[in-house]
Image 1: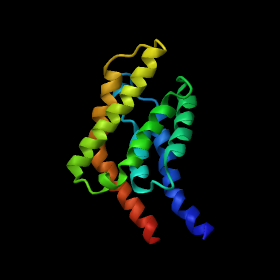
Image 2: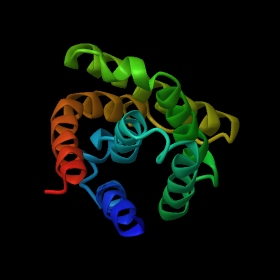
Image 3: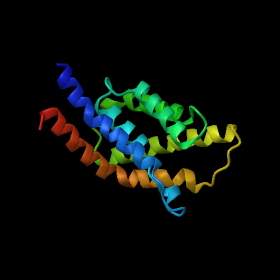
Length: 163
């Protein structure tokens, strides 16, 4: 049973590690503000699909790791990711039955909330950033979401079926 449980958790852990790698990977200055929030997208997907296993605590830990790796205010991403995870867990049954277009619009709203929380925390801490640094990831994350959703759904199906 433990082996089965750990083999089901491995793909999620691997996608979160890959998401962290994509988040901290250096990009050219012109493309940097348009990097999707990979970890926020992954948190939304996994908390929507497996809310009892991957939830607010997981989002908090991943947020702390992201804060340390990026050198931002400690707890900034952790708080924002935890709120996103809580909202997703709260409405996961509804989100699962949404058509793809409606789910994409919901993910847009969640990413906008995530960026608003980061904007608010940065404002309290007097950290300035251009508006494109907040809106760029929301737009690109929304555009990437349908492809990421299809890919991760396939990963989840293969993991669940043991293939």
